[in-house]
Image (cartoon, rainbow, N blue to C red):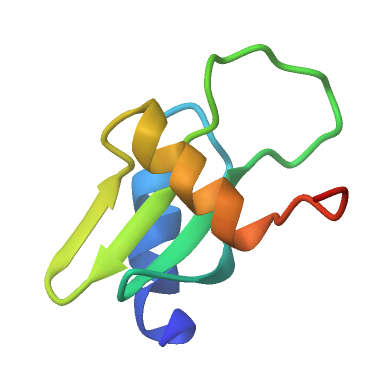
Length: 80
């Protein structure tokens, strides 16, 4: 599923402040992409944003709760 949406996710990321996007995994039927930069400079941009793709829709995460749910699924806390 990831390759199907990669170019659209990268286009959305580039239309903002990012240089591209990388596939992370699946969440609730969405392909999830992380927006990326081409360098290692630290940036303080607010809460984590992801790009979600499903069907004809490619969009940014809607709010902190959606981003948090994605992080909980794709970046599980090993300390639990």
